[in-house]
Image (cartoon, rainbow, N blue to C red; front, side, top):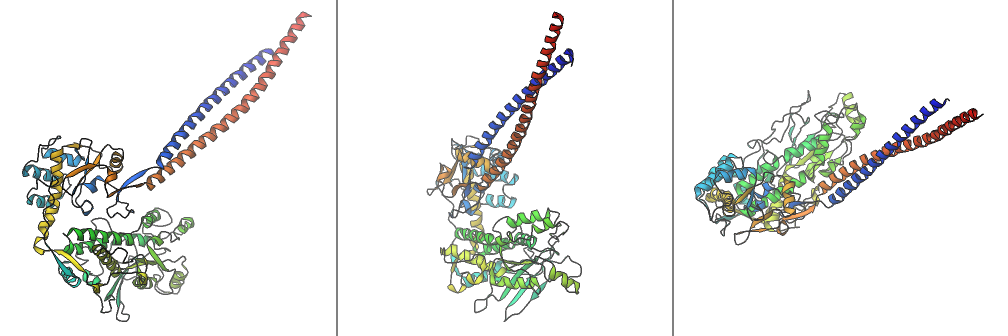
Length: 606
């Protein structure tokens, strides 16, 4: 190689080596930055392990999962005993959300408050502004304004005396319920269904006498169709008993999975929604509470007992979100269509829904596949259990053979069922349990009914009801006094607006770091400011959901950083190898150039 070429090569090697060393240094700095990132997310993860949340533990059970929220504190209910619990700042001014602040401003209440309380006209403007912002309904606003303004409540005086009560026996209570209650059809409550599969009956409606006991079975085969009420049902129907204390009629609702499904998961999700529903939906449980409230409502102790009974039945029918989550997952997979019917084209996804893990959280599996009509067998079994019972078919052998021989393809569909008499009985048991203070005397967990200990109508329980002529006035007073107490404190203490106070996490964080406080009415009917930790209804518990999210975030970030580190390590290793190779070549070329120069000098010396 000529001298010029060797020198050119040497310069190239030198440049490349310098570039490699620069890249290696750059990667080294990136790795240091990743180490800092790893340290940061580790610190965040460690801090997240101590995350807590505030829950409203009204019953003092220690198991409440009711999030402490601004709406809960500022809406009249049994949970705040119909007195507002106010969020206040460090100078004891009431912290108002955007809507409440609008009402205060519309009423003309200065932010520093008044020296006392204003006229009823100002109070009525406040109520009307709450109506305009959708906080209360128009009818509620009208009812509240019809009650004289109580300018002393929350400032040393309490709610006006309640209406007189009277004692009634269970027999008398039943007569009042019969007179005042409405049936399921008048409540727009659907407890029946119609078939969507061509060639089958529009709905199933049977009474089957067995030793003098009749049962009603209602079938819902395809979950995506609009349902129509198949029968009329009243509270009296569910409470009626024979002389031996057995039900006069057993009312059972059963739901079938869509054709081809091997698990009633979708049917279970639908059944939960139909029986529990949302707060204002025409569900069975809401209907049940509303009927009893017609007679027992207005008495504070009864209101609390009704909510307690609601919670017990809710927990029995809807113990957790697993079934609903499973149903959402099911209809979002190509293994099932939107009605929950199977598509065997994807066996992997199909097999994911054969497990009864989710179903076991809400009910008892009474059979895998029956030889005869699965729906009727499961519906009959519901009479013997507390809560849901269900069957699951893991293959299509029986269904397939029946169709092959011309039989009914619907006979072996997986089903889920529940006895509505038993649900009503548990509601009554929980009601009596709370009113009588007999904690631990009753047992109504899901499982065999023979293991349950339910109330006995023959035990002569006494119930308190409001005097009939005073029910409406007392109900109006309860709500009017709630908003009067709120209005009085806003006027006397002043107010401040916080647009984010409705955000649960934000409000809880303010409470935990001491930025705001809770002001609660005391036995002397005055409000006192204090920390959330001193409120007997508020508990601070581990935020398991937040911790789980933080762990998932940490694991994802850690995985990304480790992947980047591994990539950098590989690049640095390759650069080290190339630098070593370039160094060797550099030394070789340098030596070659030296020899060429030395040889040239020797030639000319000669």
